[in-house]
Image (cartoon, rainbow, N blue to C red; front, side):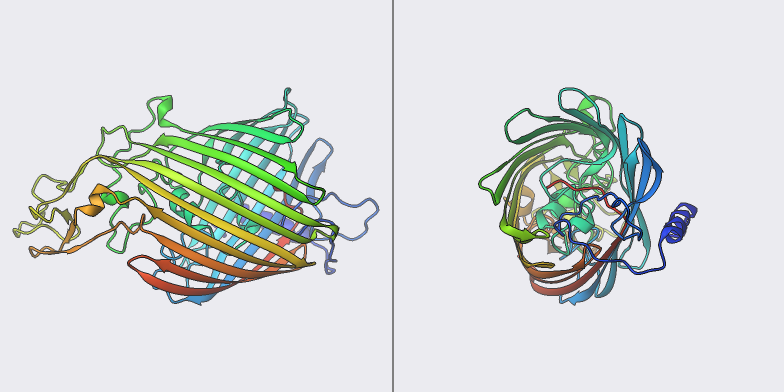
Length: 480
């Protein structure tokens, strides 16, 4: 919570270390890729991009703070969890505190380094939320180009999943990431081993094992089964997530792997390719089913940077990710108590219970495998120093499940019901998002974005968001 002693103490420490004079702008690195920069020898004035450092030599701690706020509105009536799937997306008309991230990173000793990211935000009800996004220790001196990381870690899947809010190229999360990995991304306690393959070009292979349960394990053993249900509260795949069988063997954990390679096409062009996979159990249906989830993805990043670039500009970058998911939906009986769905004894199936359209009795769901897929593609053009124009296209869809084709009804406790049709958490939708970003300096950015959303069975919506972000201290470098 923002009022906790830990947060207050760290905030006070930050304020005590800040100088009374204004910051000076710098332009030593490309703005959309934050890099850690050590203090300049002989520099007399602290700047916002300089480390706020405790300790020195082989054991030190760097502090940094990033704040992100958005303002705007939408024609949608279901902004949070509806048009906006990300936990740090703008979540209401008016203002949204998307996140205040406090990062602590540094060297433990000559053999290990550590990193921790704490995030505070406000939901649509103005309730404070706190997240431990990452907290890990990593080796720096293993032989054979190996590196081991352990703790609370983001799953190394694609390009978007492991990015923090301040590294996003758009105001909100891509639809396919929000649908497959949930509002907060796929991350959990575990360990990851990576190998820098000895090739003439950059080539890295990583494998990881993590816990498969909790709210950050959407599509697997997430607390709510998966994703967002509809307004009536129906769960994903219209089955309650009651198959949480715990961890009895290694097969109950989440396994992932990624291979990426990068090489220069010319003196001004770079290409990066990647392939990822995540496999693990899910908790769909009644206890006893061995239900599993498989997610596969491929990604591409092509970047051109002018031969006479200054501060990273001009540049042109095209990034695309495509994901595919196979999800085992388990057996499930909507007659929870064995009383034909009539808990109140009035002779009718209770409100909120799914019933078969033929028998008008609580529906019995058979096991089936569901197939979903999605893609986003974005292009960024840094046309002059500090100015970037972007465009992103999102598309998600699925193959119709047997349960969707049955014409199930939602009972009304009066002998009738309304048709539920396609599952809104799997239904087709697409989005087009142009934006314009201005970086006044390395320490701040202002972004204006428009979203055109088209959701099957729900219609079209228009949203406009203005985002402001500031940073203090040297943030750890993010991979290219």
